[in-house]
Image 1 (cartoon, rainbow, N blue to C red):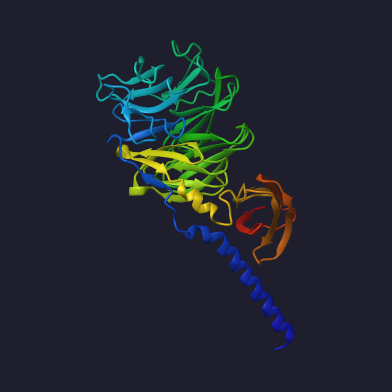
Image 2 (image 1 turned 90 degrees about the vertical axis):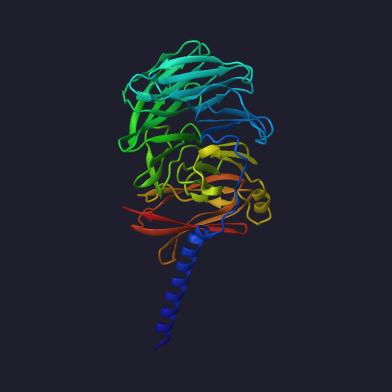
Amino acid sequence: MNNNSHTGESRKSVKLIEVLIFLLCIQSNAFSLQIPYWSALPKPTQNTLSRVYFIDSVRGWIAGHNGTLMNTTNGGVKWNQVIQDRKGEIPDIFVRNVNDLWSIEFQYPVDDTSWFGSNILHTTNGGQTWSIQRFDSTIFRSIVFLDSLTGFMGGSYGTIVKTINGGKTWYKVSDSSGHKFPIYKIKFYSKSYGYAVGGQLEIAGVIWRTTDGGETWRSKIVSGDPVFNLHYFDSLHVYCGMSDIDQSGAGFLRTIDGGINWTFENTTIWGEPTAFAFRTPTEGWVPMGIAAMCLKTTDQGLTWQQIIVPQQTAVYDISFPDERTGYMVGRNGALFKFNPNILSIGSEKKNDLRFYVGQNFPNPFNGTTSISYDLPKRTKVSITIYDILGRSIETLIDTEQQEGIHTIRWNSGNASSGIYFYRLAADQFVQCGKMILQK
């Protein structure tokens, strides 16, 4: 065998090793040991909890079934029931400040003659006294106030009602598209601009959008299953969670143009993404309902890690009042607290928690795709594109950059369809990602 043959075989071996290194780099996170992110606190009730909100590290509220509405002033060590003699389900609360709180309580009909509808509960003295308004034949699930006078509720049949006098009276606002599906959550980005989400299992997922302060809404069917919640990264970049609970699993809907277009991202992970809470601008958490786990992202939802909940308990809502404090609630009064010790564990490593490169978006892609990454300090960054054989295709950046979140785009140009890899190197941090070009 001549030297050229030996050289050819050596080059093939080198390329094979490079590919194996890339694949190992990509898959290494999937096999890492799970850190105990959450610890169980004593259950404040045996009733299932569907809502948690903390205004700071020690003052918070929880709500759920059988009229459960409780508060704490010592970080969850002790809880007090703040309203008595309620029997319905409380799906949502809105806390304007420690004294001013709104809550919804609804009851389903148990027979043909029983009452069903919603009660709107309001206190201005921290729960010592309450006013109660009754709405017949409408199940409201979400309540939000923009200021002391202007508020909204969303519920069954696509109903959205508005008040401009602090809840004394409510009136129904219009939906020009007329989709009559239940609304699960309303959130505003500003006083003029907001979304509502909802839908019906195996029928439709719907997003409602307003740009005139909630006077008019336009709805759009965006999926075949309900949308449960949403999160604003900014006015254009909005993220929604939806689920096909009996088939393909949880998915996410993303817009980067203010709701004009939505892109579906399927995780194939079983569960219901019922809420969003971002501990930092890039690290977010999603409780997954009856799947008894939550999802964690460090790249604004481009990739997700599955975190098993202690005691394998169904969880439905989550709240982070600051970067070191978090609470999560679920079935049969389950209450969990975020373990801040993992932050000091992470700081002992050379790589800061915020040092990452995310999955490219969109993926698969045709033509152009974006790669986001977060730098904890000013450092030199290099991002290189490789093909499936480990050959360097293009260097996107090789320079020093400031601390913070960055996004860079790759225009695939004349590159052919297939699998490619991107590799980010910054300081002593190296991470890879896999992407699929489809032309």
